[in-house]
Amino acid sequence: DAGVTQSPTHLIKTRGQHVTLRCSPISGHKSVSWYQQVLGQGPQFIFQYYEKEERGRGNFPDRFSARQFPNYSSELNVNALLLGDSALYLCASSPSRVSTDTQYFGPGTRLTVL
Amino acid sequence: GEDVEQSLFLSVREGDSSVINCTYTDSSSTYLYWYKQEPGAGLQLLTYIFSNMDMKQDQRLTVLLNKKDKHLSLRIADTQTGDSAIYFCAEGAYNTDKLIFGTGTRLQVFP
Image (tube, rainbow over all chains, first blue to last red; front, side, top):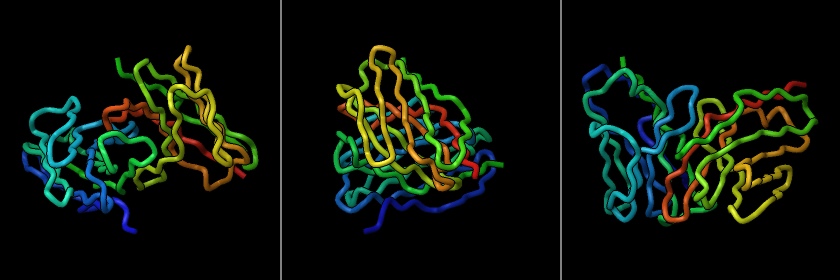
């Protein structure tokens, strides 16, 4: 069975540009969460989507937005990129909003902002 | 408040036990997790413990939880070179997938 997949694997952008990152959850999983992991730190929660609705939001500016599609895949959009947005962006999926041992992470998208 | 702290580095000899420690502050946390991250990779869930438990054992892994001190530890028995990675503890609440991660502990295993 395929795990959580993310695309692209690597991305280089310049300041001021926008970026769209994509995530496909494990088949049957309806919840998708996004995390930002800056080098040398733990992941920071950005968003959770469940059944196509935003269910949780972390302390990130409005430049960050996301959506979930009917097939439960998700996109994370970041506008007006800053150097500090350079990070590994991780997507995690789980069957429901309430998760214990079944939250699975993808390999991440490494974004570099120059 | 939400804050999870870990020591940054741990170095052990192959075959010895490793103990990675974590402290958290949110007393409403329902589940506490340990994740492993290898270089260039995503996060792999190793184990978790419910907040009303004191201990959980899973093969070479033992998790101890001291709720009074808000202290969580992960013991890896017979540590192998393949265990070299960054280990994150994380806390979560019952009604959300949001996880609060620690800063990570880099485990280095030498022969």
